[in-house]
Image (cartoon, rainbow, N blue to C red; front, side, top):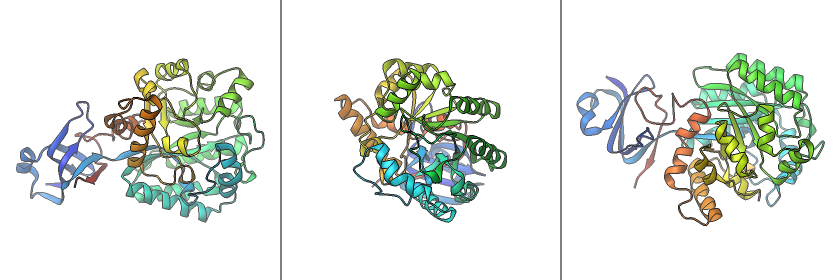
Length: 391
């Protein structure tokens, strides 16, 4: 007897063979997948013998989606500061609102985002930067209660700029290096690995808000603790201008110089990069989170996703936050990614459905260091499953 037996019209496994099973079934015991195959082959062992049978015969069964760039506390900030470029959008609306949030407001906004993630099929995500004023403990406790799986990064900073704009960050969000580092380590000690579902990462702010010394400390700490790092990079032209004028380096070269590359690093946006930088990302096995709706809404540009994939970069998919996207729906994000990339490359096959589904599942799992647990429907993996109505 098993706990759950799921019957689907199609089971899209996302396994190495990328098998799609028509009239497929999945058996689950203690949250782990114990059998996957054609219902005609599995029924004799499991039909009528499960504590719960899920009839999804008019549905497609998929691995739960993995969103690699989320700002939980921005859930209540949708439609904030439309029709602005990134830096003015941040300075004039987003940061003032976040910089005045109470812990109660931050928790309510994060809870709303979590519900939207669940509703739209996301089962794992990467939160890109909590700060002390949000009350990160209560937010992490809420993630645990939700049943979702998450890598939660805590912002680390010791300056208040954005690119070449000194003092750009709202005063309510500014923290010193000692405080932000110490609290990240506290959260790691308290929550990392909790229930096998929550992992604490380092979330250095965008270049301009972190000193070279602190960046390097973050890299060393992450290596020591065997955890991840996520950071915005090369989102807008101003980011390129900052690293070029300040360090005489392109953004990815700057990240490599600091040690902010590698399989435990997720760089977000990565819009304004050269061929050489793309090759560096591939050689260092650095992960990229592509956020097409956010980049499109803010007029930031279109990332060279098809070029990155062709070069061997592990590109994943993220929604970003409420005010830069207006939703947290990764299914819609897959659609937007295809349309924008194909228009940008003037090639209707530049990015295909198979590509974006990989980005939203197995590639996302790899980026979060969870590919042995989630991202595909295979025996031995956790049963993070979703169903989508077929007709």
